[in-house]
Every structure is written in C-alpha cells, then in structure tokens.
Image (cartoon, rainbow, N blue to C red; front, side, top):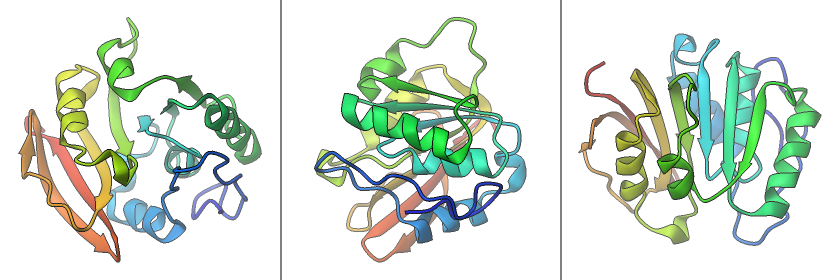
Amino acid sequence: MRVAGGDARGIRLKGPSVAGVRPTTERVRAAIFNILDPEQVMDRRVMDLYAGTGSLGIEALSRGAGWCDFVERNRRQSLDLQENLQRAGYADAGHVHCAEVSRWLTQPAPGVEPYHLALLDPPYRMGDPTPTLAALSDSGSLHVSATVVVGHSSRMALPDSIGGLRRYDRRSYGDNAIAFYTSESA
C-alpha cells in the first residue's frame, strides 16, 4: 500500500495488523483527491475517522493539508498508524487518538479550530454509516463550509441529507462507493 499522490507519493505504508481493517484502496484514494478541489485540502484541518492504517489522512497531508486528527479504536492499529505517519514524514502534522469514533465526536477538545474536511471509511460490517454522519453533523466540530467524504458499500444507498449535511456527489468503484457531503450553510 502506497501514498497515491502529493509530496509523499510512492511511500509505502504498513498494512493493517488487525483482522477486519480494510484500507481504502489506492485507486479510490486517488479518485477522492482528484474529485476534491485542492482548496478543500490545502492548509486545511482534517479528521480521519475509523482511520485504520491512516491512508486517507496521510493522503490529505501529502496533498497539502495542514493538520490531521486520526481516530482509531484499536490500540495496536493506532500504533501502526503512528508508524505510518512517521514513514510518510508527517509525525508532526497529525495526532492519533485511540478512541471510539462516537465517543470522540461527543468530546471535542476545547479551543480546537473546526475541521474543513472529514474523511471516513468505516468497516462495512459496521453497517449503515448514517448515525456516524448525524453525530458528526451535530458535533459542532465541522467548519460551516466543511466537506465530508464517506466510503461505504456500493450496495448501500445513503440519504441525500443527514443533519446539517447535504450530499452533492456519489461515485462507485466496484464494491466501493464514495459519497461527498457539504454543510448545508456552505
């Protein structure tokens, strides 16, 4: 598994060491960042939820994001993610939070600037990501013009709007689908 583009393009990342972790493929990561406008990434605060190997957040950092918070609940996978940040040269540009996404979203750090980009590719076995998207929308952690990118099974249809988020695009890549949401006030 390699970084698909940007400054760290081609750097190999450590794969998952925990059963059930399904990293976003290089093809899908490249597609996501080709669809996003560079201004949606450059110098922006990013969160990578259900981070796993950290490949999505590291891809954002490689393409110019200013900071990324990674949230991964498994301690061993969190250590591997930290190693991937170091391999890619971004150990000082991100922080790994070993926590449940739902709990982390309800406990935002005081004084932290809002996030401009949220990336999430939860395990398909988790089922419908709509409750996580609703919690994210309600968390108060998103900038008013935030973009949310969610990976999901192509067999699942996500709603057009969830809380304060409105879907503006959806793409399918085999069994994988990517939905793009923006804040309704944007």
